[in-house]
Image (cartoon, rainbow, N blue to C red):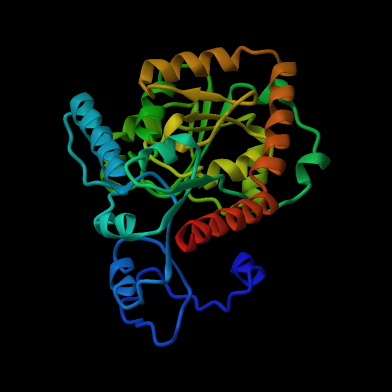
Length: 321
């Protein structure tokens, strides 16, 4: 809303799933998110209104395809079919097709998932600034074999099943900050309860005392998620200097400060965890510094607002021609 006000707009904010709202005055711009409400609102607007679809991840069909693949992998390995945990049920096709432009969170992976649509602009997610990283002395030698899994809902979508099977084979510690679904717990009870290097913490609020204790203990944040838009939980940890070990589907470019998992196979995760755990403390300290630098420049609130403003202006300019 800050960007829109800066551009001179008076803004009405409507919940993305509010199916009672009907446009009752003249609008110049509509930015919508999600498939359950976009079409109904858009059809009640004049054709000359600029319509932007704002996406927080991959193209919805690609998102669902990748989730289906993960659940199929689980069934092949464990013989169990669990319910989808981050499935997109409302079609976003009308929204994507009718929008004058799509603004999506994420890198080229996210952008390319929308390649059949004419105008796609991608931008990094962001976290609010704080300077705690600069004020804390960290023991990088102790933390080099400690990985934080800090995530929102969706145990299989986020790849926790892959991590549990991988960390059951390595001499490294995994700290799990996520809600565990009952069905998932039954499948992975052995890994969650019996391995001394796997620590189930549960849901931990960002920037809480417990969160800070964990980011001080760990050098790395790990996420083998199957579909994200510049995963916000990882970005938050990057602001604390945690080195990202992430799937390409997290839509975060690790460049010179992290590691990208290309296949997210259990074998790949095992090899990467073993390799990183054996790197010297100086490597970890340097990568942490680079991660923090990237976080406060490329994944900052200021960068997000600047990029969002540019993206909105680009869509408007192309529409008005």
